[in-house]
Length: 413
Image (cartoon, rainbow, N blue to C red; front, side, top):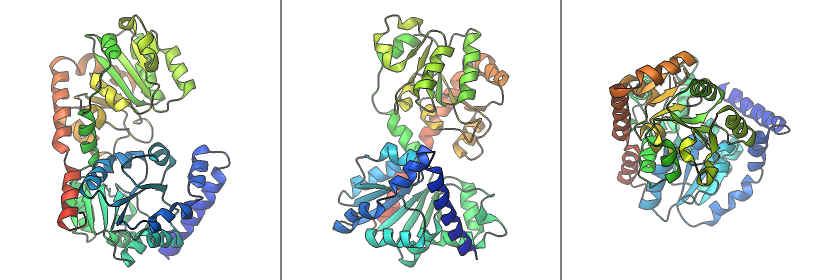
C-alpha cells in the first residue's frame, strides 16, 4: 500500500512541476533540465571507466560533499564521477564544476527512471548527501547490490522513519551500506529502528569552510573602508535582517557594514543602497576615492561572501526569520560570532555555537541591538570569537574519515 501511495505522490509531483513551470522559472528549469536525461546518460554507457554517482539535493549539500568528492578524485583519478542535483539552485550554479565528469539533474523517482539510470551507470558505489531519500532508486540500488552511503546524514525524531506508521519508510533505509552521520542523535535514531551500520563522522561543511579560509584573498579597498572600526557582515540577508540593520545604522553606530543579500537582484541592491546612507556597491569600491567615508558595502557579486567574512567582527546570518538559517560556518571559521533569527532547530552546528557562547538567536530588533551594544563587546566578544573559530577547526575531518573507509573497503584505487 505504501509503495502505491509513494508512486502516486511521484506522479502528482510530476504534474505539479509541469503546471508550475508555466509561470515559475525555477520549476521551468527543473522540467527542461530533465527533458534530455536519456541523451545525457549516453556518456555513461560509452565510457569504459568505473563510475560512481554522488547525489546532492541542492547547493548546500554539494558544499558538504565537495571536499570528499575532490579527495576521491585525487585518490582515484581514473574514476568517472557522475554528480546529480535535484534542485535548479544547485545544478545551475555547479553545472560546469571541473572535478565531475558528468553533471545532470536526478530524474524523477519512478521505477523506470531508476532502472535506466543504474543500467547506464553500472556504478561502483553511490553516495547520497544529508537527508534526501528517493525510495524507488534506493530499492533498485539494493536489488543490484550496489554499495550505497549516506554522508553528512542528519535525521530527527519527527520524520516518518520513526513514527508508528513508519515501518515501510524505515525498511527503505536498508539500501544503505553505511550511514556517516553528523551527530549522536541521528546515530541513536537509526539504531532505534535496527540499523547498527552507523558512524558519527561529522559534517563535510566544516572541511569545506576550513579549506576556503586558507585560500588567499585581499581587498585593500575594504580594509581602507573599515579601518579600525568593527565590521558587521550580513550573510545571505533577507528583509528582516536588512531592516534590523538599517534601523541600527540610522541610530548612529560605529560599525562598518557589509550586506550580502540572499538574492543578487538589481532591484534589491538599489533598494538597499537607497535605505543606507554612505553606501556603495562592492563592484565600484575601487573607483571610490573617499573609502573611509563609506559606511555600508552592498555585495553585488555571487560567490564572494565566504571570502568577505574574514573582515567581519560579527556576522548576522539570514534565513532565521523564514525557512531556516543559512550557512553560519563560513563566518565562524574566521572567528565571527553569529547572530540569527529563531528558526534554527534543524541545524546541529547552530545549537553547538549557541551552547559555547558564539551563536545568538534574536526574535526582535531590541534583542539585536542589545547584542551589538552591550552583550557582544570587549572581553565577551573576544571570547566568543576565539570559541567560534576553535569550534569549526575542531569539527573538521569528516571527509578524511569517509575517504579512509572507502579505501579500506577497496572501493577506491
